[in-house]
Image (cartoon, rainbow, N blue to C red; front, side, top):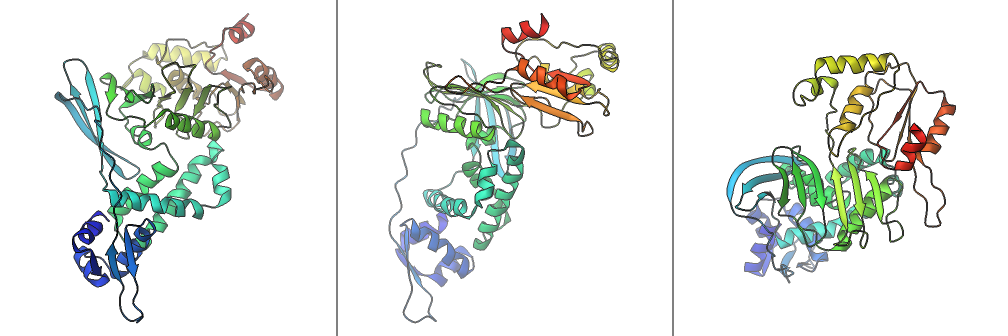
Length: 410
């Protein structure tokens, strides 16, 4: 698309066949692309009176590219570099070491102004083509993954009419999926398996990440404004039936990938709106991973003792500091529960994931009070409710409030 517009800028006006030969594309494809660009005011398609003749394309105006700001990339000695693919979009990471700190720089495919305008123009058509029932199901996180697949198929089908080729389609499908259904560049970061945390402190500071090998790192990505952080937080909250607003400025939620999200709004966080994503392993860890590679956090004797404790229905308490592996250990140990037993889990945010063979499982979630102070469902309420479900096992997730711990363990 950038090549198409660049050629038109030089020639000002050209016939459809000439333009198609220059781009080595079928005339029908070029005509469809020009029809989209015409809506953006970049070109004019002029059809002759004689219907047997091909139209001509005139160049009108290309929107001015906004000035490129300094992305904050730090220059220094390169420690390591690697690449990964996020929904078809290739990304390259370079971690460098400066005199002051280490820096995480991610580079993505750069699109020209014409391609950016083209993507913006077809976004509206794709949203209109999305069935209304699909848009409503996005608020149900259990269906969000299926909706994402359906939306991805819709985008691919729409792009197929332009015959851009599989490689170009894969990239554009991923870009549009992140723009329309996801969290933009955050979605790409969230597919780097070397990362454990993704943080936004405010729109003036760069995004930060916690790398499994190098710890906390600044990135070269910035949020455009505080409103964008709020919009991402609201989008995440809607998918789990929760709200973040001035009266409820704290959000605990999770993504459809299972990652935990914590968001706060100013002035609760005085420097600006924040967003923290705790990434969980895409392949769940087992006790074998904790005993051996890659965890090495438990001896075989410890694992055997805990296995016996769970087998004989003893109470097990898992405690530890932030990011010490409490949830990972709980998920791994829960696999020891016999599949013929009924399990009830109680959590503030869904973090426990049981194996598929444990079919008799009821996950319960707490709920915060509304703006009028009504409708709260606390852990103790769910605990009382769970006792009426004839559970064989009750698993309590992370307790963050002292009053709940005092009631449950007094």
